[in-house]
Each structure stands twice: as C-alpha cells, then as structure tokens.
Amino acid sequence: MSEFKKIANAIHQLEYNVNLKRGIIYLEGEIDTYSAPFLLERVNAIRDLRMDEFTETAGIEVDDPINLYITSPGGDVNGLTALVDIMRSLTCKINTYAIGHAESAAIWVLAAGTGTRYIAPNTELMVHEMATWLKGPSSDIENDAKHIVTQQKNLYNLLGELSGKTADFWREKINKQNLYLTPETCIEYGLADKIILPSSL
Image (cartoon, rainbow, N blue to C red):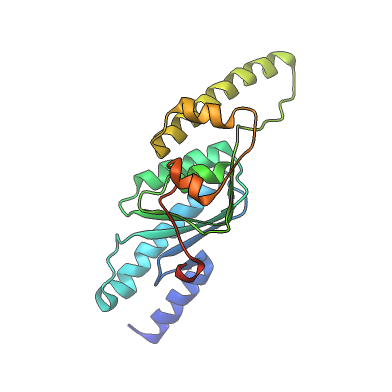
C-alpha cells in the first residue's frame, strides 16, 4: 500500500471516530435520530478500510465482528429502535460493550448486540419506562397518550425478545420506577453475557 493511501486511511479513521485494527465504534452521549446513520456509516467505513488495508496483510476478514462501545445516558425511543434494526440487519456480528454508564435507551442497544454483550465492572446501568412531556390541545394529548401506551408495550416486547424474558417480566420490573442494575443482574436478566475487565477493553 502506498504511503498516501496509509495516510488517507488514518485520516478516515479519525474522521469516523473508529479504530480500524480493533474494529471499534464509539457510541457516546445521547441516543437520537442520528445514532443509527452514525453507526451504519462507521460499520461501512470499517468494512471498506478492512477491504483496502487489512484483509490480506493481517488476516482480518471484511465481515469479522465489530465492537460497539456504549457510553450513554439513553435518549430517543425512535433512535434506539432504529439502532436495533440496523444492528440486526448487518452481515457482521456486533459485540456490545457498556462502559461508564448505559441507561434508559442504551440498555436496549446493549442487549441488541448480535455477538457477545459485555459490561465493564463499574458501569452504571439503569432501565425505566418511557418519559414524555405532552403538550397541546386536549384531543392531541389524548391521542398521543394512546400512542405512548402502544410504544411502551412495544418496548416491553422488544426488551423481552432481546433478553429472553417475557414482556410481563419487564413490565413488572420497571413499571413506575427506575431500575438500577449491577452487571451481574444484567447478565441474570439476559441483557448482557459477560463482565469484562478494564485491562481487556
């Protein structure tokens, strides 16, 4: 590979906030409607760079697993469901890593990992019901409230599917409260697979 190509690939990695050699994407901050395109762009960047640089020289395959490092307080419901759909659509496995904190919507993203789902030992983990700030005419509020009930039901179902538990299990656990979890409890509840030591991150 030419020196110019190596420099171009290094710039590409910085621009896309990825670590190519270790196949890492960093999902930081609030989850929103831009999070799914953010993930997909970076998965494609890693795969393209692997194809250009590492496949032949380092024995790395284009569709080797990608590692998604999550440090997030949560965020938008539609953002989280889009992320889950993207992760499920990929031909490569996505290993998820919860580091620092993974709360609210970020719990769904952690649980949606299609490879191995890891938690660093000191990570703060919390899951809760949807939050909303309805406003407007009373007829709109009534209609929106019905939609929110449907969305919450869908989120219970999705979390049940991702964890191997039932929707009723999660409804009971997080109804009207913030549920704080230890890494061990996350594994027990099917939201993650392993605790990973910081030295292995």
